[in-house]
Length: 234
Image (tube, rainbow, N blue to C red; front, side, top):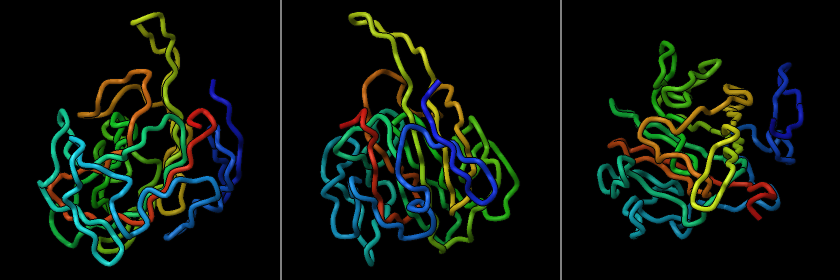
């Protein structure tokens, strides 16, 4: 079992995996990056990102937010989008996003390019396996806290990668990945087992991976993105 600590948040017990930052730093929009975090996007440039194929990002920056320019991103396997230049294993990731006031609001945050936390208009929507805030088609959120289109939302994702037993060129998974998600300040996934890669995510393996933001044809905006890697990444 992974090491963890228990923190009480709004009357609920939150299991935080392997990380030691205050949960108060994960609440609300425009959350400041804690000391030791890596700022992945501060509103000024794409210096921490590349297109999925390693080329220059073709999205644009609008009023301090990155905005998807639909269908300009390369498709890696079946995922279209951009990725971080750095790779990670265990971390706390903070992402703020805003859905466009249009019919298409589809995007996603891919962890290690394997596991998707869905971005979609879920405000007052019925629960479904692919709804906004879901671990895509593996687990729906415990509660639906999606905001109306045009309002800024936050994901704080606390992730522990799977563990593998490695013998030469062969490896065997001995422990599933786990994650906790705080959506708009509310715990929506609490120390959840991630059974395998989601949807079109890359297959699991022992290697670290990048954070990816999906281009699914919608003009979703992102801002204030930072990641706090655990000691296993340093």
